[in-house]
Amino acid sequence: MIMIENKDADPKAYEPYAGTFRPGHGDFTYLAKFGIRDWRGGGRASARETVARVAGGAVAQAVLDKQQIRVTGYTIELGGIQATERNLEVIDQNMFFCPDMEAADEMKKRIIEIKEKGDSVGGIVEILAQGVPKGLGEPVFDKLDADLAKALMSIGAVKGVEIGTGFQSAKMLGSENNDPITPEGFLTNNAGGILAGISNGADIVVRAAVKPIPSISIRQATIDLEGKARSISVQGRHDVAAIPRINVVCEAMVNIVLADHLLRQKAIQ
Image (cartoon, rainbow, N blue to C red):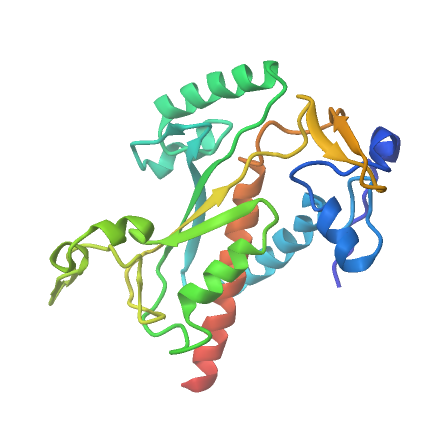
């Protein structure tokens, strides 16, 4: 068991929204599902629950460490600013954990600009898994890429996942998308390290699309619990973007999936 106490709760900040649905939040669907909702900003719809994922991911990392498997998450896009370099040595040298220092500087300017407007932004986190052995993953329903996609999509703010060339592969020819094989290994890695749901020994490359933080001070149209039209401006302690806090959550979920499949494969062997 891992228990983490929340010693910094402030439900008073949410009292003005107790009877009003917040656009972009799970308020509406949680009420439809359970008949109740936690208007205080907590509950399972809150990003606070991801602390348990990070704790679990740390345990999974201990399993991966024994196999020299390294998982690294970093920001490749934020607020429309894209990283063009993949220099992992600099991701700890900027606040966005971006592998491109010039892009990180532009991201900072963009965040300040958006914050002043009372709005929020989304972005893309790329997760790189190095040292993953060949043969992890099941052939049908528990494909490695399927489990990775589900794990990342289970994070509240993630709205899309791609592996390797992902959606770009839909625009490519087979001769372009296939990864030629040589005695030394694959010449390219469009597959993102996974073929037929099973790891092929190349680096696993996964990207997660993160939506903007829904709590914004810009006034929006909504309804109250009685279905009457209302407008809302959400105040309080809210980030402009889930990035970079979500990066370590993405890493943790990839850790958990890889550790799970690693242990399953050992059982098979």
